[in-house]
Length: 306
Image 1 (tube, rainbow, N blue to C red):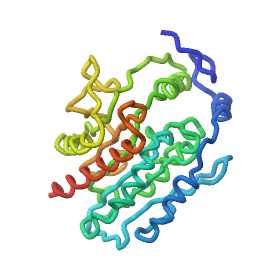
Image 2 (image 1 turned 30 degrees about the horizontal axis):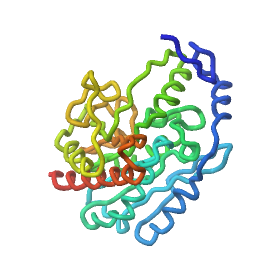
Image 3 (image 1 turned 90 degrees about the vertical axis):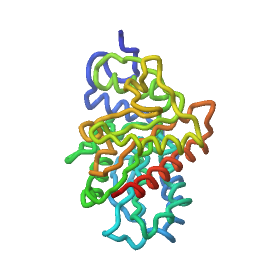
């Protein structure tokens, strides 16, 4: 199969620095991190501790990276971790994380420490992109000495907590633009042929194949099914090329792949995937699905932490 003509690079050849610069020059800022995220966090300072855990310095400006923590943090309690906006274009991950803090952030006081990082990749958020300015996917680079500044900052933030985190839920989306833009761009960047895939219609989860927790995943699926529909398997019994191991659940080796969900040694980990382009789901439904997933994940983990 021939790679379709992508507007950057030479077909069959990986991008060089000039190609990355050409790709970056095509990207347009269409929304504002300061307005959408930083401003939304400000009222939360009355109830939570908000701290800057890093600052991205790009040609387009500076981006403070903020973490929201329980007030009265207790090192004797387990940590409940939410991350969103690892891919900037996955809007409900950011909005869902913030909505969860507003609506349920106080629910676990005295039982656990809450840590929420609502927007890991603010530059990409503003441009509705998957990659950072260097055309690097943060969600393959949550490793020591990461080439992605966004990933390196989060790894450093969580380093003291790797064994304290009980559950980590990472909020994502699968969108039609994965096939129309991001996977063709990935093939062009790497100098390989683009192989078309199938976008699943509905919500699904990615479990950790190195530490599968099927009952935990099922509890989340059951909760989200009350809010939005669950993605079915395709004709091959797969979702995005991976075998479906339970309704709405596939598995990745999250640590080996350098995924966000693999940063800590949490017993319970999952990655949500909302489908915002479905005619059967509204933007608010997508946010509500993320919130339902987080609540179900935390409730199950706390009930089964022994």
